[in-house]
Amino acid sequence: MIAVLGLVIGVVVGLFVRPEVPAVVEPYLPIAVVAALDAVFGGLRAMLDGIFVDKVFVVSFLSNVVVAALIVFLGDKLGVGAQLSTGVVVVLGIRIFSNAAAIRRHVFRA
Image (cartoon, rainbow, N blue to C red; front, side, top):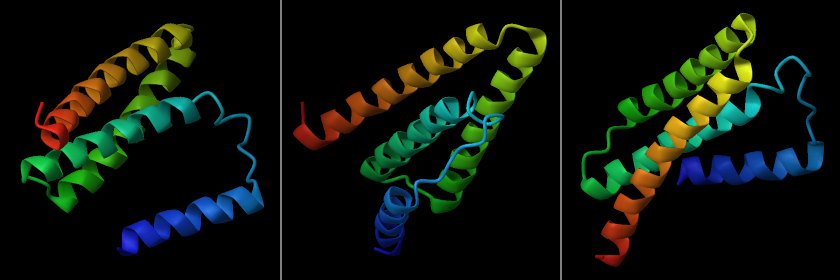
């Protein structure tokens, strides 16, 4: 319940404060969001499977975001940032849809 309350407070504060993202971080933000969504869907699937561990979720969440951002940063330095960004989004997108399908099977028994 505390996590849900924190999420609601964070969303409300974000809507009223309207924080600005520094230009240097802008290319990495969408990738970080997709990586975070992958961890959230994986955590939800693990919860429905009965194997959720909060420590594993936190480590997965943070490591997904950091690794995805590092891959894009490395791609930018090598001059292939767009290609690596696309690759990261495709891989994480496949994982998100796979977890979403498993969640759907759990919820709707289909």
